[in-house]
Length: 370
Ligand SMILES: *[C@@H]1O[C@H](CO)[C@@H](O)[C@H](O)[C@H]1NC(C)=O
Ligand SMILES: *[C@@H]1O[C@H](CO)[C@@H](O)[C@H](O)[C@H]1NC(C)=O
Ligand SMILES: *[C@@H]1O[C@H](CO)[C@@H](O)[C@H](O)[C@H]1NC(C)=O
Image 1: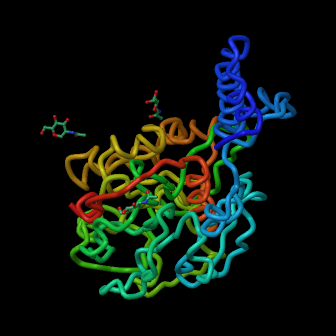
Image 2: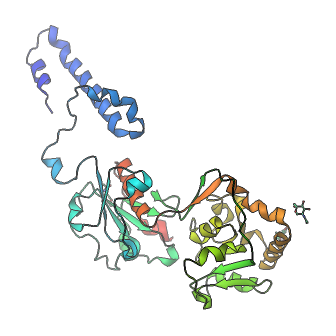
Image 3: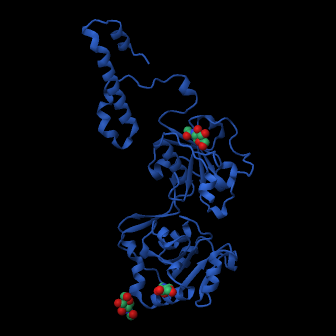
């Protein structure tokens, strides 16, 4: 990079001009830092905005070379390789829903060679990987592995071990972590406990004898009458019925279909937001407490047997003071659930925007399935 004034200073090597190259270098460094602060960290951008008017030479000249392969520098392009579950989305919603600017989401595969990132939903990857992009991967491009199913419910494909750059998952240690729900601090004084008609309820669509949750339920029902609904019990319910059924129950069995670290799904967050006390079966209590307050739920592992659990539920049934303590958190928090799947795509794009560094991922299969 040679700038006009640099050339000039070097062509006049008098003693007076001896310091000019140094001065030019200092000016250049100053401009470089200004550029770095202006574009490197948008949260402090306002601090440096006034200096934008300074006449700095562009530190990165736009050449035809770096123009062919990438889209406009300020816009991040994310190619959604498979639309999860084939659903339709408004791909321009990152800004309106999440305040994420300059993200361009597309499903147009012809933009592959320009895309900053490619979002790939695990469930749709074919076993022989033949439906993944087969063109040469541009050096700057990151592939994002997206999966919201637990390891038990996801096919282990050894071929994907060293192929991706980022994970997008419910796990808290994923590069892009999108849990099935979270609590946001938001004062909310006017919670009214919904009218209760049932003591314990459970809605389940897939019944599997070998699931931990089926075994626990079979033990529990010896001591208490559980109101069951859902496909598994020949009592399917629709989305309109769901909230009123769940909120009419004092306790709801928020039993996960498989037990894995951080695998805490809408089976917890829905009942939690609907004004019932979730009785959880899943990862450890400690793990749940990374997501929600310890006083907002009952964990099956808190008891030595299902019989003991049932006795405790019956104590709470009779003592409203004790029962209401499980709703204290509602004064300070609100349940927030992600928008499936647009939020996942927007968060992925946001990550690409914020983390320009090289990121490779090795041993994805071990990380997820071991
Ligand atoms: C479970 O059993 C242990 C010892 O057998 C006892 O100390 C503990 O209090 C019991 N827990 C509950 C909740 O009853
Ligand atoms: C309900 O529980 C509270 C707190 O444990 C206790 O102080 C109160 O006496 C109990 N009420 C009844 C009716 O058992
Ligand atoms: C992405 O990851 C792959 C494999 O893990 C690696 O070959 C590639 O260089 C990485 N690219 C970037 C931009 O991080």
